[in-house]
Amino acid sequence: MNPDTKRRRPSRPLAVTPAIVPCQNAPSVQDGVNRSLALCAGITANADLRGFFAARVDSAVGATLASAIPCGAPQASEVVVAELGLQDTNGILRQSWVRPRQSSAGLGWDQLYLSAQSERPYRADFPAAHTHLVVLHVSGPVAVTRGAGKHRRSQTVPAGGISVVPAGRELAMELSQPLETIHAYLAAEAVEEALDEPIKIADDLGTTDPLAEQIMLALNGVMRRWEPCARTYVDHLTMLLALHLAQRPHGRYDQYGTRDRLSGLSPAQLAAVRGLLQERLAEPVTLADLARAASMSVSQLSRRFKASTGETPHRYLARMRLEHACRLLRSTSLPIAEIAACSGFSHQEHLTRVMRARLNTTPAALRENV
Image (tube, rainbow, N blue to C red; front, side, top):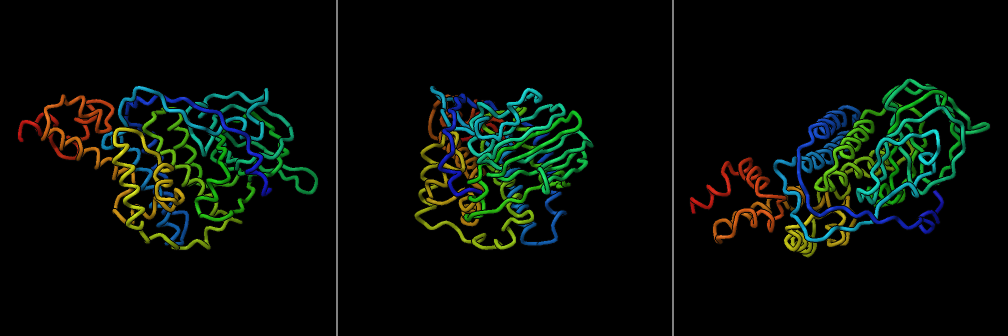
């Protein structure tokens, strides 16, 4: 990758997302993550690598449990965030032979741009992008040719096949038949942040990669049934995809080992993270926000926070919100709906559902028994 790539990166558009967060369960996303957890246990014989991936997927599972996790309170204003978009791609999606079905545009995803589309046969060259491109072939088999001259190669790619084009790499492409695909454009710094060092991503064409396939399907499921409270889940899936790209051939994951996995946050770092969680109890909080408070990368924050507390940041915040609601129910006469809102729940029914699931009671019953 050209070292100047990051400096030439264009400005990202601003996505305006509503701060009122309705939460619904998304079984298809949960199923996809559960399949990923099973797959990551079977695709590698390396115990450390397998355990590390399993921990990542487990964190993602925790973020999907909408019935047990508060997802933010109604806010009077909207949240404006920078996001990855079409301007961060190599231009394939702008072509007339591509018919987009849905994309993550407007969802505020700042490390990943996702798009699902139909592609008609074509032959074209595309400039290098500053994002890594991962393509999932949803349909197939289909013959694909990539490269030119001595680097030209052709392959019949089955449904479920994965192709990768690293950031900074020009692309010459020929598609022989109509194809359904999902494209994920991953910010190069997200992959480097996953291992806290420069990473070389391998070019690939149509390989079978069950874990990458399930991550892509899970991301697509989140996009199709988007709810703002799933933002932390998207962060986890993006990090998992980045880690997986880094450990593929020519990556550096094997050199990572177990470094830093069990060391926790310093007392000052833990206090800073807890302080931010307490301060924003009624608002959505991203892993990036917490990482900035602790002055470390997102991947370091996730590992070290769990080592210090025994919980992922999202589960920890969920417990804080529930405990805060219980305190208000016992000590004040505020309406239950107001307590739900100021404790980070999207509505009174959400608080009731979580309290019943975790404490086997309801807000009204808890208040009556004081």
